[in-house]
Length: 336
Image (cartoon, rainbow, N blue to C red):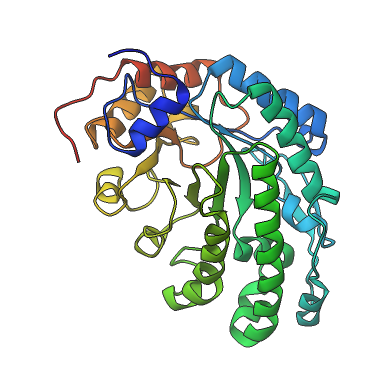
C-alpha cells in the first residue's frame, strides 16, 4: 500500500479502512517547563520532530484549568509528571459562589492557547493537533479536591451553579483553541468511574455538562478524543459521546479493546501499559503487547497509545519499540 500522511492514516483508521500501518501516538508531561509557554512549545515540537507521531496531544499542566479561580498547584515529583493541587480554591461550600466567569485569553487559560498557537504555526497543519480540555466536573474536583463529593450529594444546587460557569469557560477555551490552530480537543474526564460516582450522579453532574461542550464544538472541530481516566469506567455511558476517538486504561480496567470495539464505532486509542510493560518490560515484551492489542481488532480502528500520559522516565528504547511494533504489524483478515 502506498505510504500515507498522518491525516490520511488517522482518517482511514477512524473509518475502519485499510492503512499503510496502524497509527501511533504517545504523549507525556514536561514538568515545571510546562509553566513557561516558550519551553512547552519547544518540548512539543522536539517531541514530534523526534518521533513523528500521527497525532500531537498538546500537554499543558493538568492544573491550568483551576489556577485562575485561585487554586495553587505544584509539581512534587509524580512519576507521570503531573502537578498537584496544593491549595484548593473551594474549601467551604459557599466558596462555589466564587466561581465566576473568566477571560480565557488571559491568565493560565490564555497561556495555554498562546503556546498552542505557536506550536500550530510551526506544525502547519501537517499532523492533527488536539488541545487538552478537562470536563467541567473534573475541573470542579480539582478546584475543591475531595470536598466536591460531599457537596455533590449535600448541596447539589451550589455545585451545579458553579458547573454552569465552568462549562461556559470550558467551551470558550475550547473554541479559542480551535481558533488558534487546534483541530479538536482531547477531552478528559476523571470522574466517570463506578468507584467514584453512581451512574445517575455522573449523568446529572458529568455527562449533562460534557455534552454541552461537545455540542459547542459540533461543526467547528475536525476530530476529538475522549479520555476516560481511572478504573471501572462508565464505558457504556460514554460510548455514545459524539467523538471520533476513545482512550482509556485498557490494560488496567474493563473493557478490553475487543469488547470496546463492539460498542464504539470509530477509533479506539490504547494498547500500552505505560507504567507496567513500557517502563519495566523488555523491548520484545513491549512489541508483543502492541501486536496483541492490534490483533484484537485485526489491525483496524485502533491507534496505539498509552492509557494515560507516559512516565517522564520512559526510555527512548522503549518508545522506539512501540513505534517499531506498530510499523511492522500486518493487518489480518479480521475486520470488525
